Image (cartoon, rainbow, N blue to C red; front, side, top):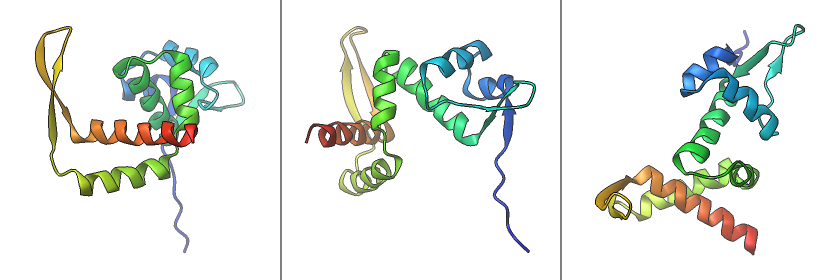
Length: 134
């Protein structure tokens, strides 16, 4: 008896809906991000697995939430090392018990808060940049 690890497969419309985008955005991003290469059926239909959906979500975060350009997002994805980032996140969780850090949004002139997970992501990305510069 063998265990099989099966990933779910999504059509382009389903994958787009999962991450809150339109299908045409995924088709566009395919041409912009070489990491995003969906499975193609014999008829050319695009199919996405859970790993693709995670990548799409990451790209969306980089472009929409962090405000990076496509080129900036490409560079960030190229330098992204999931295992190294996970180690940094684990270490920073042990070292920084505070869950929120107050900041001031200059555009809206109001105080905002970043939760610990965002700070961990920023910390991991800064360490990745430092590693590139060494």
